[in-house]
Length: 580
Image 1 (cartoon, one colour):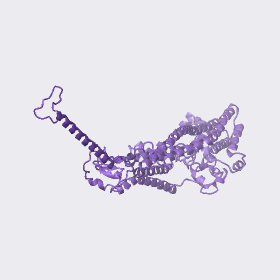
Image 2 (tube, rainbow, N blue to C red):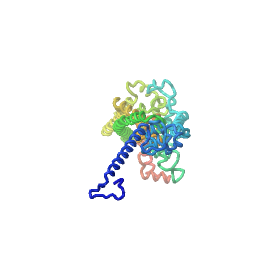
Image 3 (cartoon, helix red, strand yellow):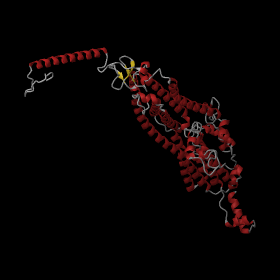
Image 4 (cartoon, rainbow, N blue to C red):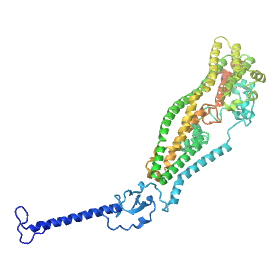
């Protein structure tokens, strides 16, 4: 059929009737088979020599011939042949004209993500330095800001090296200066007997620089923000300004939080450069090690949340108990004075007895807070003598107290009740006096309530360990993706780490200082001011013990019209005898 002569007849079976045709067909098939065999042998030889089966002439490599590293194929039509360690023109399936077993078509698959031949090396280092540089400037600003505050507004102290060795009976001029709002008023018997007619310069001051407890409203209006205009600043800006003050919990930890943010930014910068320059196998090992830091952070976060929340709730509740105990103590003192003030005054001796009770009640109140208030701790006896609350002879007796001067003052008050009260009034006075003494003791008992040393040390270790580990294991970064690690500056990661560390450290700082609730040196905004409570109590004591009885109607009319009558004169004489 292949080479059939003209005029040949084909049978029904499809075979030719010419015998020579079959011979020519067999010869043709033999030649074709030989050519196929030669082609197969040629292909095998080309494969052994490194050429592709479809290779003809190797195309011109152009810009690929100038590429010296794998990552330099970025933004080109070239790929990287790791077998020949050179760049070739090709596609994702392989190079053109050449066979390469280890073909890299995309830059992200390169062993390193660094191209030394590119001209953007300076730009890369500039981008890497922006975030750490900004974090360093922020840390420097916080550090200088805090140091300036320490220099310009030093914490009040006695300034003497032997201050820690003093006892409660010793005097300090600086301590008296710090508490001038309490010691400035001279308490005299004459002013006490004047009662409600006492002039303003002899009265206990009604205003004080700090209330018993500060709150955001007190601090917001401290500079007159809401008094200068009807529309004050936004609550958020005022709160941030207060929270960032150098002795609040957040302001005190700003330097530490900024330092941890700087550490986090430096670690991220190192990882960006490692992802760019380290080979893929070594980087994968480092990325796995960095990812496993999360296995440390996760249990530390759980332990910190458990310990810190439990401890914080209890200490804040304890702080409120100390605060409320001061108001209860104030009320018990008022109860004693109210019952004593109900007794009639018949002679000057009764007025002197009332003035003595007034002094001793205030001494009990003062000594109940003195040991726990830094600015009262070293006040001594001299300021009390100068302000009129203590007599020199009484001070000599208080110096001989076995435990505390306040105990002797409580004994004096109980003896006063025994001498000056009678019958049912005496029983009520004793009951109120017992409650008054119990409240004074409760303040000391509450101050001594502390967490066990093991629990407190464990809490500190867990919080500090978490803050130390957070900069090295940010949970939002996928370190397995080298391209993502290398490209992003990760500003939010560093900022988030700083915010979380600032929260934990500020909460720990607040819990540490709240254990001394009257310490206005370490944490002035959170400290209670017992002097405000004492001044308020003392003003009410004077009203209870020195207020005259109400005048009769006729005496009041006579005083208004200034026309004395016989009945008004009699009433006035009776009222004057009762008062004086």
